[in-house]
Amino acid sequence: MKTRWATALLSVALIAPWGNSTAVERYTMARVVDVDPIYERVEVPQVRQECWTEDVYVRNRNRDVSAPVLGGIIGGVIGNQVSRGHGRPAATIVGSLLGATIGADIRDRNTRYHTETVRRCRDVDEYYTEERVVGYRVTYRYRGEEYVTRMDHDPGDEIRVRVSVEPAR
Image (tube, rainbow, N blue to C red; front, side, top):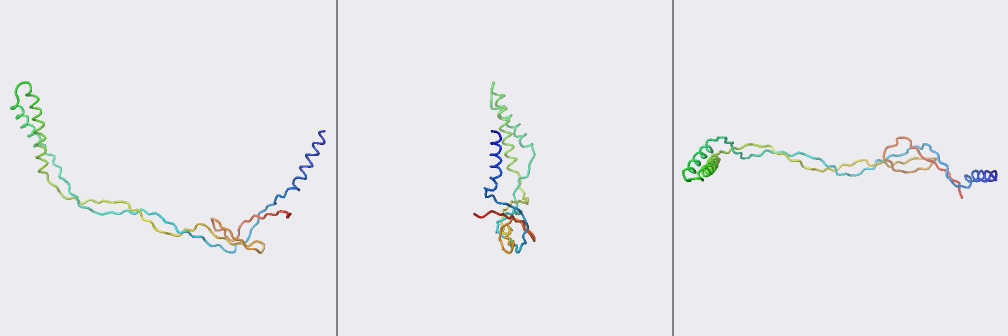
């Protein structure tokens, strides 16, 4: 029984390749006749910096603290004089704060301005068009026949081709 199964399997294994119509493939070289680059127009972004000078008004920094201090003292004295009893310390503090604020405002009103030249820049996106090679149209000759294909690189003088042989039905 085992011998029959082995014989049957061996027969199928030997007959199967002959019954199939699988192609036989091999590789060879063909001569390149012509190579033409294929161009495509593309938009290429380019960032350019644009700069200019501009005059701006700047306030002089006045760090003089005499006006706020003097205003605080005068406000404290007035707050102390106006109030009586238990509210006198609070009135003195409020008068001092109010006087200091008024003194700072008077100082700031007398502040001078000057002009400074400042350089400002911004990035500007520009686009230009250029032609780029996106592939090659390759014409090659194999056994007296010419064929055309597209490739992503220039193959040079020869191109590797696959030759397939298949039995006719």
